[in-house]
Length: 317
Image 1 (cartoon, helix red, strand yellow):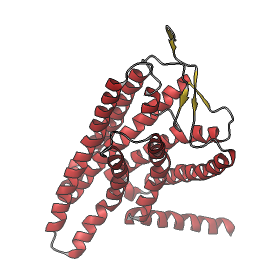
Image 2 (image 1 turned 180 degrees about the horizontal axis):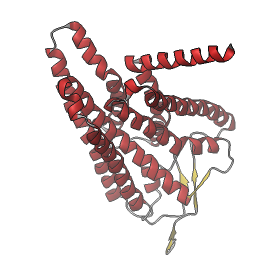
Image 3 (image 1 turned 90 degrees about the horizontal axis):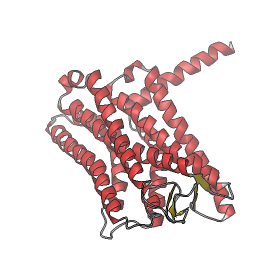
Image 4 (image 1 turned 180 degrees about the vertical axis):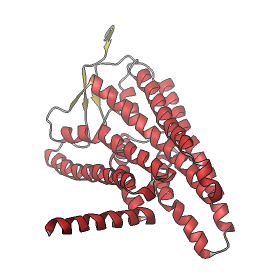
């Protein structure tokens, strides 16, 4: 696809994290282990929710969606990165680059919106417990989940189409671990300031709007918890939100710390570390947080392990 002397390359070269072979092998082993933990952790969370009828509630319906988003987001970036650690020619085809950009950007947006939806669910559970099942009915839960997936996907589609319509120079080297939006935009031969402003506005909408909804939900939740007379009641109400609040702080905290800074924008190294944080660390930690800090999930694990132990004993005899 050509524009005079400005053409799209058939493939791009991802510079990644390091050019040293020994370092790349070490990183391959490290991130392979983390990716396997991520996939297995999220798979078992989804399986546990499906098998235990006590977890067939709106909160765990949204958690299932979050686990699917997490493992999909990791899969959109990590396998390609692992392959490049062991490859001499770290190329990614044009179509694969566009697909990676679309899926990673879309899934990231979906997660932020989904966390806001989950905050609303916790708000209803704490502030309107007697009407919870009436308000959070199956139809509303499905619509909220669909809204999360559609909003993130539409934003990603627009950004991907706009980015790959830019005239590109002969430079095919992307200084990143993946086809990240800003890293690809920097390859353009034209002034991209308007594109960068559009990206910033889009990021603010998809980041700050859900964050404000989360903030409002938790202001109401904390206000309600403080009005509870008994210490036991306050603890129970807080534990209802503890896992979600931990994940919110983890996800939004990094994004806000990164982008709301005195200097204009994060460095290339920071951008790589941010991508690793969201592609590797967050998807791996989320199922752990919900397993360790959630009594219902821990109870379901214990029940499932007990059933498996009993089944093993019967088979042995």
